[in-house]
Structures are given as structure tokens and as C-alpha cells.
Length: 152
Image 1: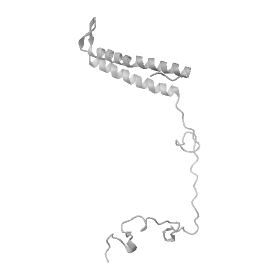
Image 2 (image 1 turned 90 degrees about the horizontal axis):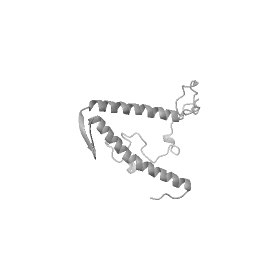
Image 3 (image 1 turned 180 degrees about the vertical axis):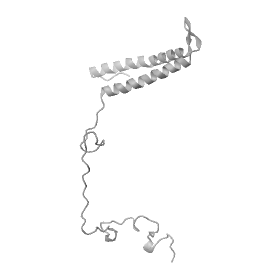
């Protein structure tokens, strides 16, 4: 007889190289041959209490801990740090792009450093988006206060 992993008796596959039971539909509750023997003198395992947690050492999500809530001042702090980093990058950009360039806008003409000119152009672009957005938000707030559906 060969040790091939072909079909065994009754058309079921043999268990060679398999980590599971020969019959994948077998149930350990109804098949006594699949039950794990429990050593004599041992009952079901019980959780063992760990060392007592001192205040401040509990892990997040463990029982008995209170999650730390986010606050407005924490959000403000993160916003200030990010704003300072953006301003630092802008300062470096302006200092590295100091070559003068001729700027003409309608009847206005002048000479500005490239970095300053690009910064002013970016600010103008932001305002072009922010002003209509602010107007629309104010319209929606007014409609919400009146309890009517906003117009499109």
C-alpha cells in the first residue's frame, strides 16, 4: 500500500500532512475520539489575578481605566504646532527664492522676490475658495435656524 495522499477508505481523503481531522465535518462534542483528555485532578482553568495595577500604569482598554478625552486645548495645541511648522517652511521658501521678479497686475507694476510673489498668489487662491464657501455656510446656517430647506 502506498502513502499517497489520495482518497482513503469510503472515499474520504487521508490525513497525511493535515493538521485537522480526517473528516472536516466531525464535531469534537459528538465524536469521542476527537476529545482532548483532561488530566485527573485538574478542573476547568480559572483566570489568575495579575499584579495590582497602580494608578497611571493601566493599559488603555483594560478594565477599570478611564479613557483620556480629547479637549479643545489639546486640539489647539496641535494646531499651533502644525501652524508653526508651516510658517517655518514658508520662511525657508521665501528666503531661498529671493530673486527679484517683475510683477504686473492690471495697472499695478512692481518688483517682488519670487517667494513673496508665489506666497501672495497662494493667498489669493485660498481667498477665492474661502469667500464663496463662507457665504454658502452662512446661507445654510440661516436656513437651519429658520427650519426651511436650503436652496441649491
